[in-house]
Length: 105
Image (tube, rainbow, N blue to C red; front, side):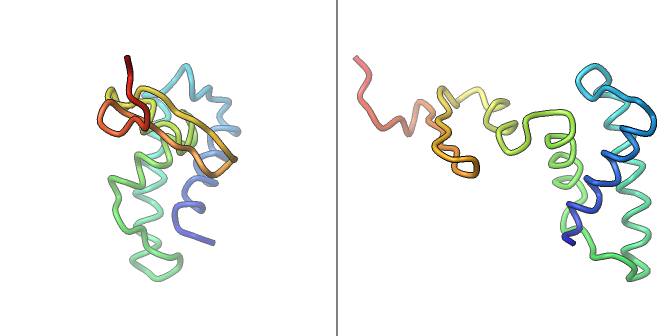
């Protein structure tokens, strides 16, 4: 299992056990993610689990997946993205002012 998936599964399990609402308690969720990543990183140093590449990007990815809209969250947070087209479950296209495929009149 991939490192990020393991961390995300652990966070989701703790959210369920503690009865947290990610949409209403983002600060608590961020603290929980930090706690899980810190614990995971210690286990990775011992070789018990695969290591995370970047702790900062892992924190953001897990938060986006647990409390946000997953892969769409960075697009939703980007003020230059004007439109998101979802053609298939794993194939979102996004258009900003600089790469919109049509001329606006």
